[in-house]
Image (cartoon, rainbow, N blue to C red; front, side, top):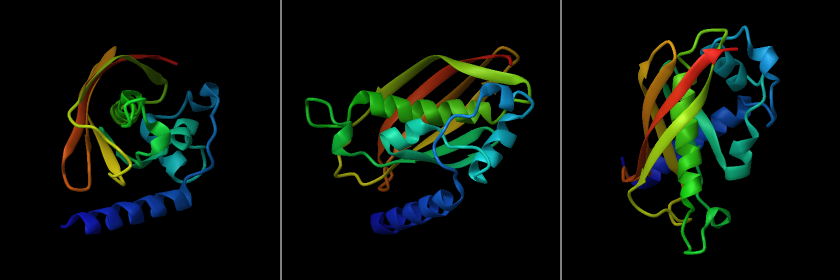
Length: 174
């Protein structure tokens, strides 16, 4: 598939998701205490729960979350630039943290929550607004009783790797 077709497919998938995602907002944690990770994501994609505001702020969104995997799509823009004229490393990190952490969250039962203990990001090549879209794909490596690990990568529509990451999350009772 050529780059233009990949971009068209990714944009069509994003439009389909946008039709059902709710407005940006924050759900009080107490309302989520009895909900599994996958139940929460299903409610978010159905518009029953708000989408996190960080995606609106940084121009990225969840595309698909299944048990153990999460795909986010972002549009790098000049508003994300550092003083050197390329996308700031914090944008890479936030996009990857969202993908890998949500992949872990999707595996958690009701009554469990998580927080990122550490994330390691390797930026392979610079991003600019010349790359119209990228995807961050997160995959769980291991979910245990107290910790979970996942890995992720940011790829462009041409298949190029822009960054990769690993994370460790702490799992705890709500």
